[in-house]
Length: 237
Ligand code: TMP
Image (cartoon, rainbow, N blue to C red; front, top):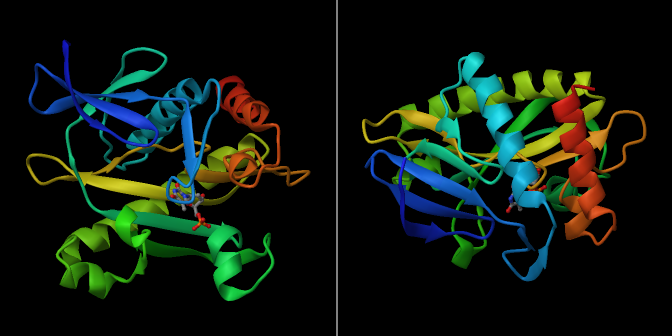
């Protein structure tokens, strides 16, 4: 597969064209941002961890019946994926109160929910990714009613699979963000990444944070946290 011109550069990844119009290469960077890019930094080795971890999660989910954009791991930082139009919604599932949920509703972090919750944010940096509901998303033509129903079904399935998987590694999946895309033939697939950048992972025994909150909140031990969660994923314990 020949890597051609760069199509796009995001905050954490670059996307390149290939000689197949339906496939692109994503390349993961060590750059880290938070708060709409206001806070900037580098997390050494993050690109490798996020690429390899995402690919494992995508393959696990594909097996469980969730279609994904994953095609082939090319190297430590690069993966071949299906070219999609990203549905401009951040799909957030939560199992335990944390982050913006705790802040918005004035509750402590760490309260487990009886049932997982789902929410959408409109992916739009200029507007700071505002919270949006299904009706608004349909009104704005961000997705159809049918697509949103499918996205919800997939997102809860992802939660079931990943929550159980991470528990076997001694990790609580607190919450996470997913993005979906539409392939050339209109199929909705899971896209983007599933990594410590996009999930909250707490150690099941100590509640130690093993994710990007260490960077967002200046808690220190950022690289170690990425290394630790990656070690558990690769060693299966
Ligand atoms: P939040 O509590 O800040 O809304 O974050 C919920 C989840 O979404 C958390 O696991 C981190 C992830 N997330 C992203 O992947 N990208 C973002 O831009 C934000 C704000 C959160």
